[in-house]
Length: 223
Image (cartoon, rainbow, N blue to C red; front, side, top):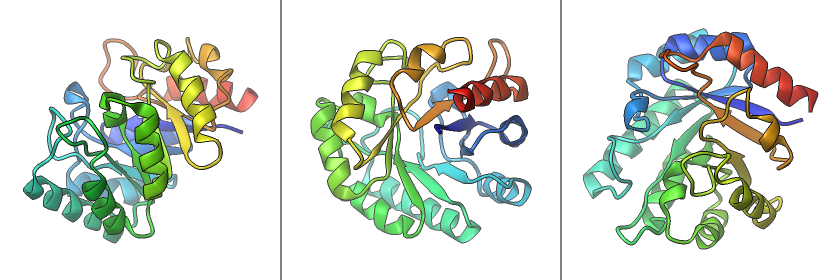
């Protein structure tokens, strides 16, 4: 049975995700810039209030995914805090200026993560060659990749997502995400992905909706 991850941009969203039946959350802030690392207080409160797994986005700023060495140190400190707080996973991503996976930074963040699960976030959709990047992430031991197939939405990247799922085989999880809602999920289920990612935020609202999470969760579990 496929799993549902909800991108939770607040404690309210996180609680709605849990109450709606999500399997886990990706905790972040500032979705207007694609998400950044939440505050330590928000991470601690999420761990205190939630029973489902908490994965934390590790991204020190908006903008591109080419980070300085100082930004790498910030990310490593945030990863270490997540481990201390008992988080189950972290969501990372770093690219070179040439839009390839930054192997050194990814390796160092993987080492800092230790026991935690690691997802490579949608920086993957910015790489020059997704199949080469996927091979690199397999070699580094990353557990999953969040992607819309290099397109703005998962629906637009449907064909590429199918190719990536085939290429991934059983070595790494491809988790479709990007504009997924209960109204369009049926068009993505034929992919046969093991996990799906959604913010579940209705148009015009700012938090994930418990009702939308319920609709997504029920559809996934029926199929």
